[in-house]
Length: 100
Image 1 (spheres, rainbow, N blue to C red):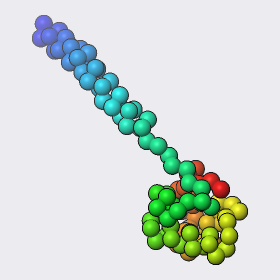
Image 2 (tube, rainbow, N blue to C red):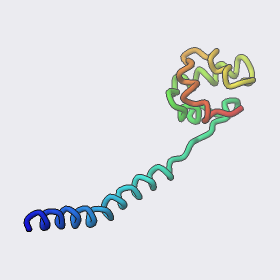
Image 3 (cartoon, one colour):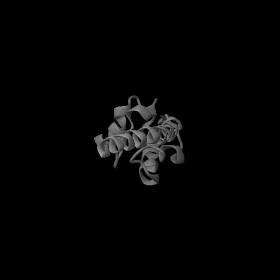
Image 4 (cartoon, one colour):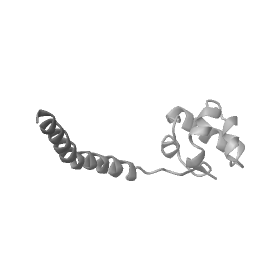
């Protein structure tokens, strides 16, 4: 008899907690779906826009603009490796965020 009550309570708590778990998943999905990926044209972007890239702060953004002004437009995304302070890791973090 006691076992039946325990099983009934376990089933009851499991069933009642399902809507709570589902509500939590909806909140996470809403947060994920509102995240935007900013695509930056490295030949046109200003310092503030370049600083939005991962691993690129104001200092590296200034270096990118200075390189662009002295060497002309970038011909490929890999040309960013010629900018002091921009390495392979930073480039890989931003491959999907950079366009020419």
